[in-house]
Image 1 (spheres, rainbow, N blue to C red):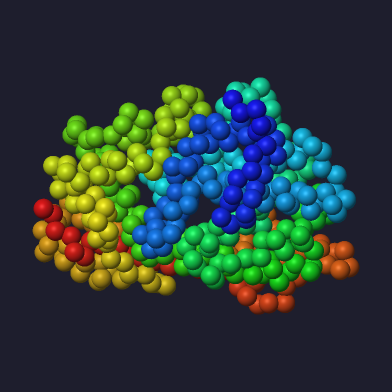
Image 2: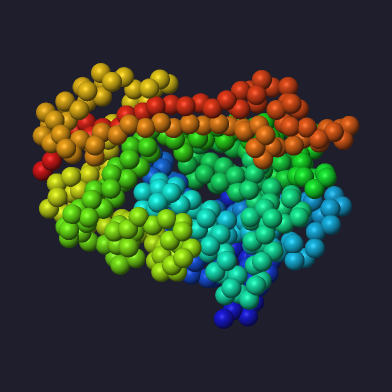
Length: 411
């Protein structure tokens, strides 16, 4: 056990960052949190941006640092924050992503049955709270939004929280997408609390506008990049095929924890009622999936082996993205092309996938970003801003796509 737990680490985005309490140090050292070292922040984005290799571990520590800086600013402006609140808020943001599974969002609805990572984060925080003798109770209240001082939850989960500020800043840094740059320091310096609500002083309005625009750009340029969508589609089809083969009684390699999720459709109720599932989940990370993909490329099933091999060698599916639903004539043409390449009709769904993606830069009325004007009025940023782009960001932009294995030949 370390005797000095007030460690300093060197973050590539923020420089030297300090761990401010023994409890936070112990939580970082816990296996549940250390697992995040083995889960990449951006899923399959490395197929587009080679530098996008940072992890949920990096992100969680960065968000904790920003929380610390924000609390110092709020304190300096006369908002009373007790020592236990200060620590609890940092713990809540530190653990906010602890429930992420392999490849973060990519497989969230593939290996689980409609179980959001936030639900698993909550379950794991409860488990840690029991292990640490109730010391996380206040952090859990803040995380769940049940604590009486609302602004703490807004710092953890809102449209201008420390989570989003760190991931935009960090993802921009590691991908090299300069358009995603945001003025984190200035936004934090402009934060305040009015009537128990988190607000941004009017002087910070332009910085928040830039933040919202940057987030929209990062979604189209990074998070929903068409090549990343192709790679994600292939991985999802790989897991889908493996599960189907297992259900048919075929022998498919997987380590015991991952095999549980391949064999069963596990719901949130199952997680809550049977600790076996949560325990198995905490043993899963990206490495487990890649080990299977590398092994499955030699499987006797041609569908499974072909997609695995193509993903490993970056022979990715092709994609067409449109502002309108994909024309039926194109789908028929693509299906025929796949059949001509030797894909049996009953296996077409593995090599041709339709879907849609959407992006909404700012949601009015949902965790509103409040601006405090010079006249001490608190207003929605969409009303405070004179830029028409902010109002436009409230509109959902939806795009449709079809992904297909253009150069696929079953071997």
